[in-house]
Image (cartoon, rainbow over all chains, first blue to last red; front, top):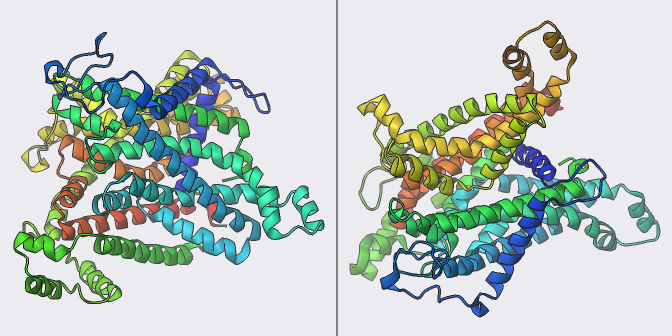
Amino acid sequence: MTIVQGAETIDRTAAEWQARDAGFRGEGARLRLGWVSWLCVAWLAGLAVAAAVAGLLPLPDPLATDIANRVAPPSVKFWLGTDQLGRDILARVVYGARVSLSVAFCTALIAAVFGMLLGLPAGYFRGRTEISLMGAADVGLAFPPIILILLVAAYAGASLVNLILVLGILGIPIFMRIARAVTLTFAQRDFVLAARALGASHLRIMGRELLPNVALPVAVVAVVGMSRVIVIEGILSFLGLSVSPPTPTWGNMIAAGVSELAFHPHISFVPSAVMVITIFALNSVGNTLRKATDLRESAL
Amino acid sequence: MRRLPRSLLHLVVVLFVVTFVTFTLVNLLPGDVSLAILGNGATPEGVARVRMELGLNDPLWLRYLHWLVQTVHGDFGRSYISGEPVADALVRSVPVSVELMALSLILSICLAIPTGLTAAYRAGRPVDRALGAVASLLLAVPPFILGLALMFLFALALGWFPAVGYVPVSEGVLPNLRTLAIPAVTLALFEWPGFMLILRSDAIEVLQQDYVLLAKAKGLRDRHILFRHVLKPSSFTLLTVIGLSIAGLISGALIIENIFALPGVGRLIVGAINSRDFMVVQGAVTVVAVGYVLVNFAVDTLYAVLDPRVSR
């Protein structure tokens, strides 16, 4: 189906841009990261570490209200200001990163692993296996994802686990297509033939010969995929359909600030900025990696 | 067009699967409808009666077939809350969403053509680099954040447009467009980077052609060359990407409507989900899902017509 191809074309063109900005030049050249990419990597690493050890950092309690200091603008005492209940926005952003990053990481992991487990045999065995597996993936891709997500979030309850499961399952068809396409290019190579001549079983060929080659491009796509998941989680928590308050998420922080947008825009815009920078960083790093591993030849 | 029978069959299968999954999800997810209707005063007899009336005791496939036949006849049932036929609510809200999507699509194309051609013509120069930087930045901004930023700037800070609300076309075209301006621009800016980058990369290839050199040698002006000679052969991929983007536009519109309080399908769905108005959710979700599948199908078919290589 061309939906994916279209999205890929846009991504690829964008990737060329960002790769060029990142200082990567020419085919076959060594991966060279520009300062933009280094900033992006530093931001992601910093955010991940801060989110992981948030409890150990000298931050105020993200849930503690302080009515005397409500809607304070950014200052020395409150670096990023406070919201309507006087809660420290810096602390809430860091704790909110836990939700965004863990949903993004777990979702990408589920989608990538299962996509690979299903896409690799499709590309290796071809024939009926391929037709039935990829047919199922096509039907899955024909589904409007936002609708499914809204429904499950609304009815099954918006817990972290549900969110990860729904988003992860929805991502599987995309990774199936990638895994299959990459497998197709490798399955014809001599080292596979050699393994077969040595009497290796199908399982061994797939596991030992093909999997390591398929895993790299899949992992690269998963990095860009993580940024999409962060957007979707943001949308859901903005609509009140993600992890329920008072647990801070970037989306529900942004939503909470909307009523004060005219007078205290920092309540919405600080978490917005953090989210945009994170998405930009993931896109930029993912696209640079993709350019370096060059998925193009795999003819998605 | 040899592929048409097969893709029609595929379409029918997908439509069945999509409607069935939607139906099953809405029906099997936790939360008893009869309890929702009866409220706190629910008695076991009352629950049994309502379940009987709604046919909830039949097996799932029978209920699905029953529902499918009704839906095909335009009967989407009645809202549990207001008692209004769901079809009426849809007739009211679908045009709002379609208008929003059409406006933003037109806007983003009008933005993408001049910027894409300029970027291609000045490839590697400052203009091109600046456009590319703006595009890759916009690719990182989720639509709801873009919407809030534009709302803050143009409605709250500058006061040029109303922040939320909707005036129907029947009360005047200009007031109607004023209420749709910020939402439409939001979605247009969301779509623009993809369109611009695609047009740019195709136009760069076309600009290498000999006839462009000839046109330059004849002394034609740059603008004439770009719009008359380069645009048409460069726009094939753009057209398909525009077609493909409509599916994404549907989900974008659903979210934007909720931010700007536009009474479209997205707002209808989220409102109905929050009030557990299961008939409305079902009807609206079905309409969106079927629309999404049909748009995809139309784009695929059109693609095959435009580029005969695809059907082989």
